[in-house]
Image 1 (cartoon, helix red, strand yellow):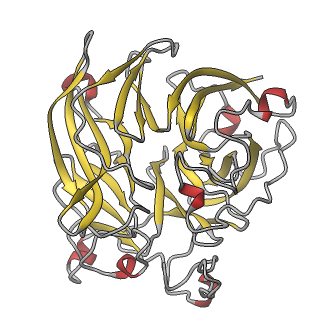
Image 2 (cartoon, one colour):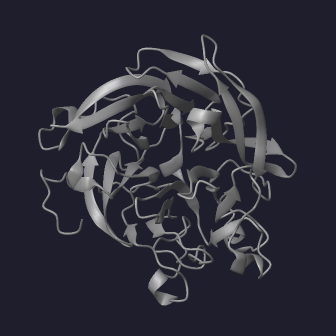
Length: 391
């Protein structure tokens, strides 16, 4: 899709420094001086005729984190504090789904991603991630359950099928994004390096890694890494805070992650590759210490796109709908401290920066609706679900 002519003028890129203090770009609920307007502010987009989409508010939530669509058009939405909500297609009805385990929602923790099993219509299975307290500290867990519909919806037979290794002290960089592989036999699960740096290069840890698992949570990592003594779930390593992962229509696996002070990335995830963190990054440490740039160490797999000033990415999809045909195959990313919706132009296994539209609110999540509309979740208390359709 490279070189396609934009339909409308792109909103100028933000100059906000997303991470003026450590990890503010991913802070949820708490005030973020770098974020500007509160999450429930009226989007500037509503009054901007230059945007290529109209914005329709659908519902509001208490610090929403992720969402997914059911086959009938209803939605499941997670809230940071630990609630899973079943939401009607028009957004007018919200019902809590019981069965979610205890969640540690301090700092960047909470109830995180939610994704349907590829055969949900037959087995009603829902997968979700959350942070919890356990031996050694805190960590991110992956769980599944069977959705029971009705007046009092619930998840039945809930079980944790995978836990990060190891649990450590602290409340940051859990990551916890889920993507099912096109083969229908595996899922990919992101584990952040928990603000500990070195675990991203530790072969025995799952922290700072993209993991591949079977659908019941058994490790199914890259055989080449396993043969070198890596944890058997590791697919790629050398990552920081991985807050988006998605397959495109060609079967390519894309991932986005927050850099340190600068250097947010979009990566094409390949098995067995080392993406370099914390040895290399196009950002620097928050205390001002330099991190060598990627170009200085060609042995590491390099990002496809980077941002500095950063966008503080949250959520990622590879768009496949017909409502915006000019963007089929492109990536869409929510911008937190940049308060934006970001498009990345994809051409095969290459990617370049596309558009960055100001939304006047931190965007935590982006999804594609059944009709091809784009849906975004604003971050924080009162965060709204917005439907984006062509003008």
